[in-house]
Length: 299
Ligand SMILES: NC(=O)C1=CN([C@@H]2O[C@H](COP(=O)(O)OP(=O)(O)OC[C@H]3O[C@@H](n4cnc5c(N)ncnc54)[C@H](OP(=O)(O)O)[C@@H]3O)[C@@H](O)[C@H]2O)C=CC1
Ligand SMILES: Nc1nc(=O)c2c([nH]1)NC[C@@H]1CN(c3ccc(C(=O)N[C@@H](CCC(=O)O)C(=O)O)cc3)C=[N+]21
Image (cartoon, rainbow, N blue to C red; front, side, top):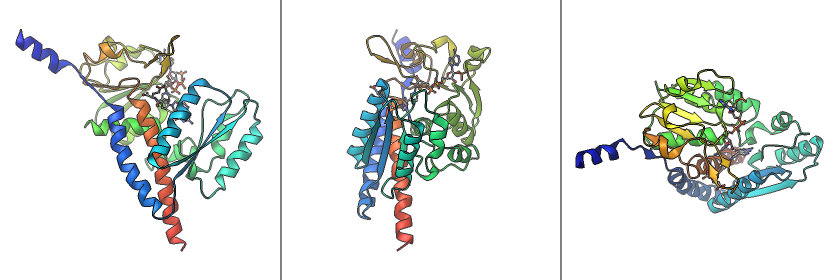
């Protein structure tokens, strides 16, 4: 009986604690911000929110709080739902030419009447803290990254923290969005994994997911991945953020069942989300560091 119990305990996977990894980076970032302060530079992040998306509001509030806690100056710019494309582009131009602003982020999704790609293209690539500008996308895919999307970047940091080296592993990513799936594929490829990207037209998805050593799920459907969909001992990363009728948050993975079979699983909340915000802050600081360097060089 005792032996059976021990076996059970050993087989149970571990939780990847996104908050813990975030804390580790936050302590380091506070030191970096202090060092910049002695050069009279306060890292500054500007966030533009168009309209009244509920999910965006929570996210923007979290970001603001985390930024201020680290010593990053956070500016929220709210624009009404009916803002025109031109007005939004002009607001971005102002931020592009403001020497005090390091990072610019336009909260997605944008209202229907706005062409999101044109808006993202307008952001100065050096200030594009989300890494969505084509220049930064191209840099990432040519393994010459400078600023990258925070969500997959945070996932790479969590993997490293828990000693998971993607090299030679089979990585399967479900979802091909610009903000998660695609950049995740590039980063895992850059880290020498063998990468498969699946989406809504993928056939035999279960057969693919069952082969994954690293499975990243970014679909947006509660309990999309169940225990039978994964390989024993897999590392499962749950990016999903789904809210039920009672506003309760859940991921895309059936966490309780999957952790019995996997080696490592991220929870929702407390997994990918906190690291997304952390990496956004890290990249704001990195841009400010380049500003400090330029200031010294131009003296
Ligand atoms: N925690 C965090 O930091 C973040 C969480 N999120 C969350 O992650 C989730 C995904 O976000 P995002 O990438 O922006 O979402 P999108 O809606 O842009 O993309 C979803 C992807 O899932 C694919 N998909 C949908 N249904 C299926 C299916 N039945 N089988 C296989 N693939 C399917 C879609 O395929 P197709 O392309 O063919 O339509 C698409 O590529 C959401 O829940 C979002 O809220 C997002 C960003 C950050
Ligand atoms: N330009 C742009 N860049 C983004 O990076 C971006 C975006 N737009 N639009 C929306 C998505 C979503 N996203 C989240 C980040 C953190 C949490 C987060 O902090 N989650 C916490 C808890 C949240 C809660 O309790 O509600 C957690 O998972 O533990 C959630 C969602 C970034 N996105």
